[in-house]
Image 1 (cartoon, rainbow, N blue to C red):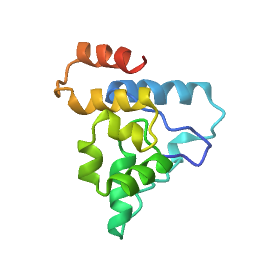
Image 2 (image 1 turned 180 degrees about the horizontal axis):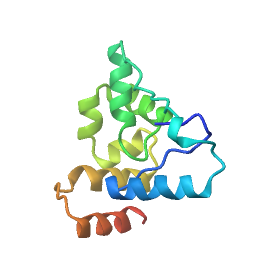
Image 3 (image 1 turned 30 degrees about the horizontal axis):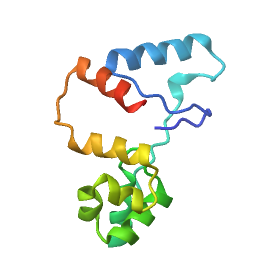
Image 4 (image 1 turned 45 degrees about the vertical axis):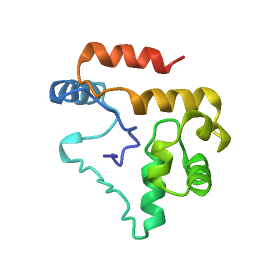
Length: 127
């Protein structure tokens, strides 16, 4: 959600943190009367073509932007091949070795949703 006041997009952990953020912004003023402000909601673009959907899926991988996503799809042929690619296949497609290592670590890590696990993972990916 982007406001017409030039706000940046803020991510918060939960509704309480969101309420605190809004309260701080309102207290500090400078944004007019926020009671009557209506947000501009931007929806995701509609992806009509298969290649656009494929590109979006590969771009969803952390550390992979449009340039690398296109390169991976051209060299490996499909989204499935990209997700199944080995670290060496990723580097052969032009992905830096450190990035390929992080991608492989992410793709091969068992899904666990806990606060402690998130912190450990963040520290691992910074390397």
